[in-house]
Length: 284
Image 1 (cartoon, rainbow, N blue to C red):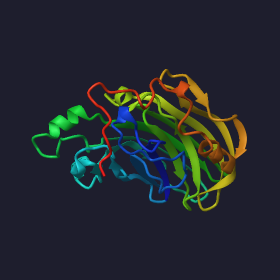
Image 2 (cartoon, rainbow, N blue to C red):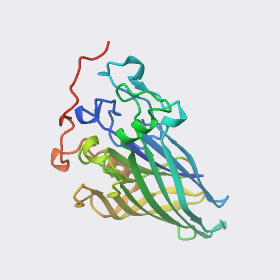
Image 3 (cartoon, rainbow, N blue to C red):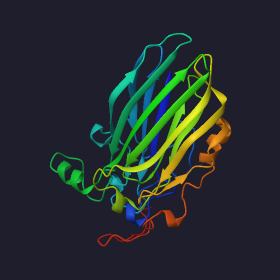
């Protein structure tokens, strides 16, 4: 079984004033499938079973240290109405033949929000209020891959679009769980400036070729044809030099990036004030 993880996460401990101080993930780009994220999506690619399926879309808990409502200070996403959702569309795969070529493609879109928001409670009367006030975090990606078993070659392309905030990463795992980083995106703007509306701005893209071994496993060598992280204005940053490399070195190009990124990459700082909101003393 092959898997593709796409995750949205915040690299700092919390989102700052513009994100109402809700907890972030306090981490960099990671290949660890257990890494926390605001939203994680997992898609399974069953080569021999000839099918592509959504495994899971979920959020790790979020907490607001500065909330005056202790009951609403933590969101565990246990209520089905608070959980993120995802849709798999246009899945396609050629049949499996031992030693033969095989290709796959699909589009996946996920969205979710943090409902631990001020005084609003999850009830039927206020559901509409929360849906209007709290914006969705939206990400859509399209992926295509081709396995050439006789040539011992794997080609994969991925394009990611969304709100541009927060950070995002896409990682491919082979049948043994060996990772191949596809896209790493450093956030643009803030929660208040980016999340309203399904913006679908270009966030990142890649075109890679790797060695492919018997048993449908990644080999050690890789060739980077294209790899970009896009700013909000659409100007791309190339992820390292293109050309020949190893899978290990390629992954390190992503995990070695500063997930916080330079301030010049962002339109507003996380501490940008929201007119109606002020920072309170933390609740003990």
